[in-house]
Length: 321
Ligand SMILES: Nc1ncnc2c1ncn2[C@@H]1O[C@H](COP(=O)(O)OP(=O)(O)OP(=O)(O)O)[C@@H](O)[C@H]1O
Ligand SMILES: [Mg+2]
Image 1 (tube, rainbow, N blue to C red):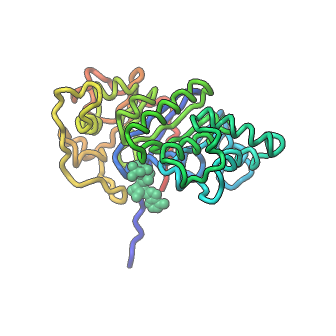
Image 2: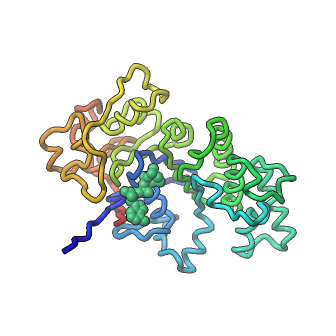
Image 3: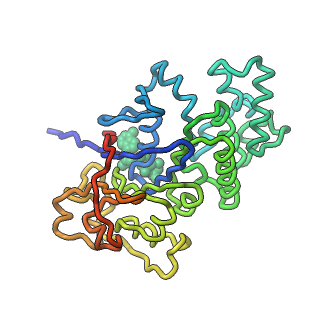
């Protein structure tokens, strides 16, 4: 007999995003960042829990209600070429959201709006009739950003938006996103494995491990004085992050995490350098104090500086199986 294994890609994830705020999401590959993005946008139905956008539950995808909502929630992926149509000039692709949603007047008016967007994201007018393969990676990502902003979304979900770009181009695209956020006021869920990028972009950061948020707080505080042993290891492996000078690299022991076989107790305990007996049996909850939150039995003693766990006030947690 074959027993079907269950993989919980995210489990009990709960976060709020205020208007105009940028929440950074970090964690190692496979920890559930993209799944969280898809859940947030309603592209993936949660098996438990709900996503609330501006006071209303995000409906299941493929409904008209969801399509109406989607214009306010846009996504930017890592690979701009994959997000664009190779056979269409970029101006057509930037104007496409107006056509789809039947706004922006005549074709000429929609083109005019698209041209204004091109300028806003730093593309030249003479590039309007270019095809995606004729542009550089950074320029392609600018096209994707222009198209995402066409309908003035209130939420932008960015999943590793600069990971495929050269470092010098990364900085330009990040500055552009930051500028546009200040001008247009969208909120953003900003996913990156690069702590430096998250520190630059986010007002708040959430650290994920094996499908759960294990720590949350202002980036400066989280990266300067991480409370969770996993965040401490993550920060110690990022040599240039603020506050890391002189910090010894923490190399995690144990097997890489397997979401099909999540360890009992604290999911991090098999790799945790400071785990005690209780960590093998009791699942820690995400406890808040002020603007910090951590999910660790030892947070008060393991560098937490007096952090005293308190229950999360809003816990309608998401799960995706
Ligand atoms: N469609 C799917 N079917 C089965 N498993 C999936 C599916 N999508 C994601 N997973 C699994 O869920 C877990 C979380 O995946 P997810 O893509 O959310 O990770 P991630 O944090 O975005 O990783 P990365 O940094 O590599 O992009 C992984 O173990 C992945 O293998
Ligand atoms: Mg991903």
